[in-house]
Amino acid sequence: MNKKLLLGLILTALIPVKSISAQVENGEIQQDPEIKLFTNWNNFSLSDFEPIQEDGAIGEDLNDLVGWDISREWKAGDRIEDILKLGDLQNSLAPQLFSLQDIYERVNRKNGVVASDRNGDEYVDDVPSEVTLADFPLTGEQTIASLVEAVPDLFKREASSVAPIADLLEQNGYDDYLDSDLASLAEDKDIAELQLDSLNLESYSADSIPNLSNAQIEDMEGYEDMYVSEIPGLSELALSEYPNSVNAEISLVGRIDFVWGDAETNRSDTISGSKVEGFNVPCQSDCAYLELDDIENLGRKIATSFEGNQWIRGRDHWVAGGTGCLAGGREPTGIHPFGDTFKAVLWETFESSDTAQVVSFFNIKTNCGDSAYFIGPFPYPQGILKVNDWVFLGTGL
Image (cartoon, rainbow, N blue to C red; front, side):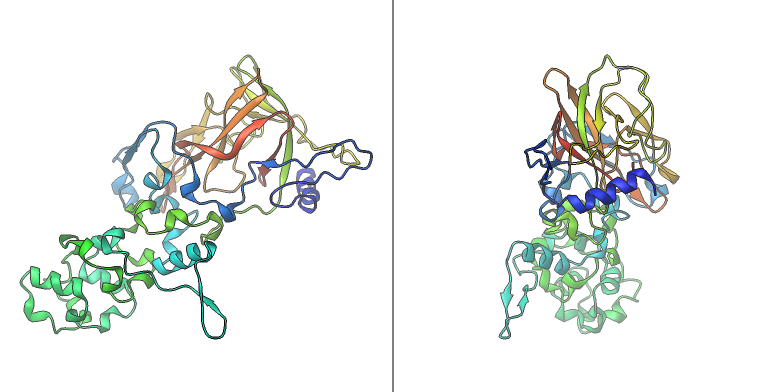
């Protein structure tokens, strides 16, 4: 068996989610160290990330190739939910597989906002009427045809029974069609492409379109271009609750032995890099890094090839990233402790205090390829490290 996998399996038995109890035979360690970088994703959402630390932008050049608008810009201090779009996350967290009701139920169950029926079974009420169509701007991107296709059973209803559609017809001079069923209107070429964004969406509650809250987001036209903050409740949803959740399976944990600064050169025994170049990318100069060690003195010595590896600082060392139509980009060298959703990057090292900072970078994931991880830096949860800290390094070393 691979030595690192063996270490992971050993540590999985020793390591609960929040901390390690160091049971030592001869009193060699008397502490209960917290594992840094091992965030409890059951209690952590996108809204819990601290703001981005640097300005950035994405141009329009590849919009036609990708099939949706990936362009945007951001400033230092902006929040992640106002930078990331649903399309960026469609092949990682997959939020498009939710409906509004799915999100509402998960968030409220986590917050304990539940009711009980006469049998004592818990349930969550429907999306409240206080949520308007303006709070869910994806509605405004829909035409009558796309809305009828996306919303369950809407095609069975008469236009007059759905206030926004009735008003849209009247606004455009189609009063004579109010008694028509929506299935036939969706096939009328003059009416089907009428778009709801011409209405004052603040005037309508989400339940003014029956079953809208049960429509799967991916069935709605243009969902990829929606920011996370434009989907009610999504930024508050724990990352473990997504269809493709952020979680760890096998725990590889190391100890920070030393923190080194810019004077270091010619480091080749690394664990950092990219999915394109691999995770053993060497460094020739300005090689600030963390020197890692195995966790020892636990009653027996566990020594593997992991001992002595270097995690190179990514702020000064960028590597190849991106695949398919978005290949050819650059991203800071780093690791992926929790899979593809984001990348962990060593960003600062301070020899004088034996401390370091780890940050997160995100990317864009499309159906024709993924970009490099360049959307960042966002301070990483539990990302301030020091010598002798135990750090979670993931499954892919």
